[in-house]
Length: 111
Length: 116
Image (cartoon, rainbow over all chains, first blue to last red; front, top):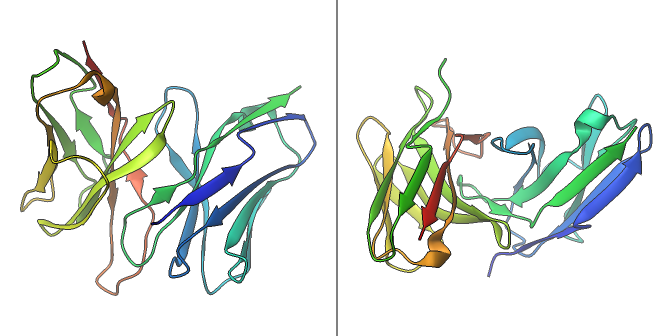
């Protein structure tokens, strides 16, 4: 069935360092890959997304790369700040609004 | 523009009871999806509705059901509650343009259900 694996489950970095979170999806028909950030006690919020016809997308300190052949995509955060501390979820979907989520990565950025 | 609104925010129920949760999408959004969030299982897809039709259903027992109304508001119902149903239930709405394709899902604050 549809599945998205996400690694690592926890990630600790020093402020200013980069953070990378990786996801692998099983359904080769998936064509939309959003990333959500969820702060403690709050709702998930979209931070960046990528579609299958694009290999890379960047928005200031955040970038996402997609490798369709290997069926994996990654989130890159540069120059991390303490306010980047949260749980990050990757997801995959195909043509509908049904999202299959990864298990989440708890990112901690230490000052 | 008001965001996605879920009611109630908190709910405590007893095993065996049933519960109905409500979700009002962002005005103009026609697609509504529901997710269950637990510490152990993460975010799991429950249902997806578009124009009052269920387009997808996740791997949950038949005790979980839902519907969408003509104004795009959605409800989900869980019957014969079990302790394991304790979770945060999140609703998300998407504009889903007529041209098709995927669009950003906007989440509500969720309903925290506790079954005792």
